Amino acid sequence: MARTEPAPAVHRLDNAAIRVGIVCSSFHRALTEALVEGARGHLAAAGLAPDRVDVFWVPGSFEVPQAARMLAVSGRYAAVIAVGAVIRGATSHFDHISMAVSQGLIRVSLDTGVPCAFGVLTCDTAEQAWARAGGDVGNAGEDAARAAVSLVNLAGLSTSGPRETPATGD
Image (cartoon, rainbow, N blue to C red; front, side, top):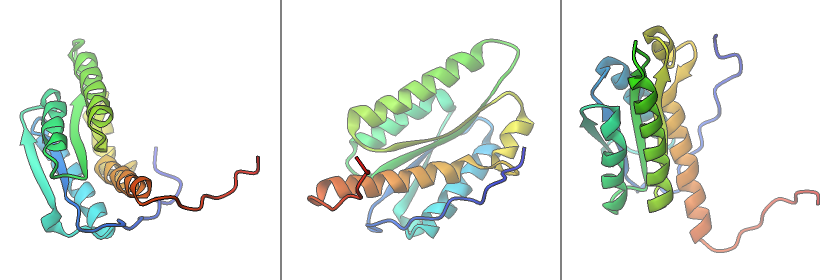
């Protein structure tokens, strides 16, 4: 299924002096590299210089949450973007890894307060994964970078004092 709506607008980073870490699974490396390029492209469009993005490779998706936590607690990164691909096989391994990665990454975000954006593909087939790694369904790495920018900007709002908020009509 092709993406029918236009891609969301690129929001600029409120603070382009931040650093972002990208944690990448080496398994299905070609797919992950496409996701990294999508993430880097979006971060650049949002105003982040390439030298403000650090990329770290780990063996597989199972190791991504632990590496993301290491980056989050280092105090060096305003956000972490996790990318990789888990493709269903003939056993239940897919279910265990997908669940562990998604739960691990949300735990990193909630426990550390550092946004940890999810760009790990969990697909039934390689064709589905490629469609989501820059194909006709978009690029999950770009989508994760978009989420990271949004959350970093939101975190800046929460620390800069009161701001006027739009009326909700209540």
